[in-house]
Length: 291
Ligand SMILES: O=C(O)CCC(=O)C(=O)O
Ligand SMILES: [Fe+2]
Image (cartoon, rainbow, N blue to C red):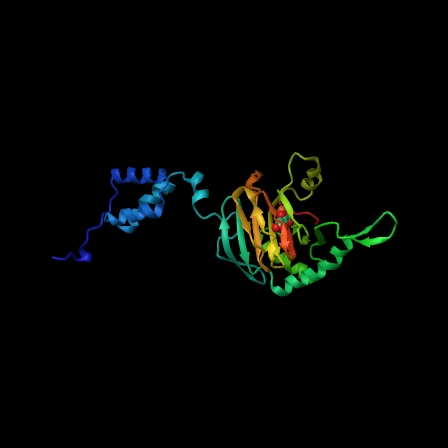
């Protein structure tokens, strides 16, 4: 007689032998999904098998699993946990999250028009900084730097005010914790070697910054332009790179509530191989400051 699947008996208890098998299989590096398959082949109820595997991974709900939880469960850092982040005037979609260091890739942070307007506003300031007085006293425009910056005072114009408010909502900190927006342009070959955005606490040069506004805690790099080749934002300690895409942003954070800093947040801008790279960056501080 053929077995009626509705009458198949599923195991609803995980014996000690099976619990030991789960622990050993996980310790040997087997994927939880493969364990689940094997258990189901052995007629375990899906929910029972999942719970046994997740108990072995995370501990029971009552066990203090916190030390593991941050690495093994979704971790959002300061960001809202939703897949869509709501700001006063735009919804921003989360495309990717990394727990350590805390990173998120966000889509639709700036409209095409806003990207173009920011470049337009920054251009005269960038050009001015390329003007150097040479020894003979003649002012010459020389492209002496492969990247150049333009700084926008907080709330300097309607557009800047709008972006300040939007970035504060995304980063979930008050606007007056934010440094003024900084536009950067990299020409061909331009790069930004790996660095930390936080101020090195024991360096003398950090002290004036730390005294006003405190430590930097998070960064939002917004991309104003696609790059034809190169120019990725790289995190060498976790072998991660992000390819610039107009209107998107890369969020990351590196200062915990207790003030500890995350050295995995080391990052930089890879050399631009073809085309130009334009970004605008918002850095957030621990405290309100005059900007
Ligand atoms: O150019 C990049 O991709 C990185 C920029 C950066 O690290 C910064 O603005 O702090
Ligand atoms: Fe940086």
